[in-house]
Image (cartoon, rainbow, N blue to C red; front, side):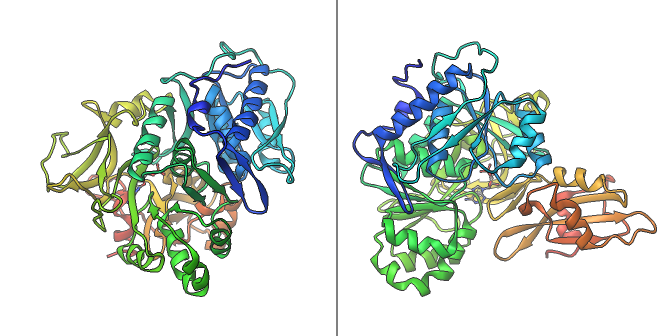
Length: 509
Ligand code: AMP
């Protein structure tokens, strides 16, 4: 049996009798019930010999049960929640890269994950629940015993990696970020204090729970403040107002595209909007257009708080402030405990008002990409982690993001590592050269474009390229714009400049 005093689970669930989880058409679950159910999962993991340092891949839909599994796994092992929309080849890459010791998935469905786990000989533990019981209360079916762990009887300590997430960092290739208990607690504390979250708050969770924004800002920070969260199956513009009306949340956090969809549907739901009493709305993970921010403030009569987050920072880096504090539309606000500075190309610190690369340091910043010493040599400079984002600090220490130096594509908050697409495209027999890049998009901020050079006599068309990609990558990664060209433009040094391609190909000004 694992003792959980002072564990991640105990600290993340601060309250006792208060409600922790709410879900559409399901009975609610208190903090105490959630702790009990998660503790059973913890004991089940220990019986399997899964413990500190073991990667546990989780492929589950958004919902209260995923919250229970995350809390339990993060307490005693390293949780690696994966996008359930991933295709078989993607899941194979992630499960292998994680060196997963166990896969957790629902009792039915999710065939692709099971097939991959079985071929990699990864045991599968399944999650079941009763819709009539408190949401989030799960029953587990364990596989036959796995190999004994080094320490399956102790919970994670501050320096242990509790969460593993893939991101592309400043290069175009997916890399693994390991966040420690300490990193995540620091980010939770910054979010909790900045938003003044408390036991009376109810957050409406619409962000995916395989993304750092969803996990830390919409689940862990509010629960650790003793509050409750509404666990939805994920964002749905049509359902949003129904959920909001049923649960009357005091806040929610989302990416700009979701906010745009909400603002667009608000006039048709004026009666619901009238009944809501939101304390604030939070926005992060991509640049929020000022018009959307102003529209939301007008519609919901509450402040919109834009924050800057990143997986490697356990989410929050800076945030605008709740009134009576200042918010500066177009900026991402101030840091709480994270240190933020701006450097030039040579790594020298710049002064206020000067534009350069944003670098960060502090308790919430990861220690380095897992198993990537080469990447880590360039990712850190003088103890600062390089974000690959470009920005400037004003005289009050308020940060504005002005651009990006890294090649990742930010499709409305959803991040795509372009090299992953290049590599798949290049395996097509008709493709000689291929490069994926970000193209401007009115609603998403950016969308994916690909430039392709075909073999001499090839008649390969756009639809065929999309069909070729469809069973290899999740739908959100399939490029909307596909350009067939004779040659991919190169820079002065003969290198392709991915960040300039949209301009060079006439897709942006
Ligand atoms: P992720 O690791 O998915 O959270 O993505 C982190 C990246 O999203 C950052 O490095 C930025 O490029 C971008 N990002 C996050 N928050 C904002 C924001 N408020 N405005 C503009 N870009 C943002």
